[in-house]
Image (cartoon, rainbow, N blue to C red):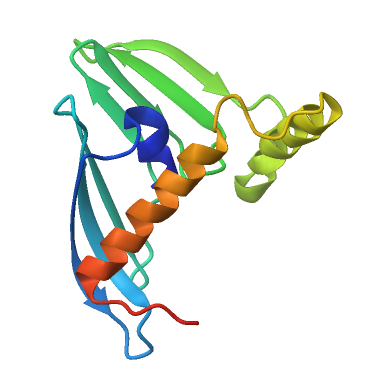
Length: 147
């Protein structure tokens, strides 16, 4: 959800379908998030199978793809509209998966050192919007809130 929010902003529309586990946890879900501009984000997740954790942004001028897992990628590729590779970044330190989140930790330390109360790239309002999107998707799935 956060990746979609970063790319499109808070969604104007949310459609979610999926299943819940016996425990009430959202076991699998597919979502379509639509923006006011007409752009859409397609998201899917499941606890039933091992799937690649990929993220792609597609547009009329080309696309951006991350290596898996997208939340800690070791590489990013940019393709032109004709499909040719325009740029490829690889983490020069070879940090696998969760270690790739060290960039977020470094940014947090920098922001705290600067006296900031929020990230200029991901402000607190974006986090609140993302949580509202998650709440609405879970509501559509029939998930209940655990207090």
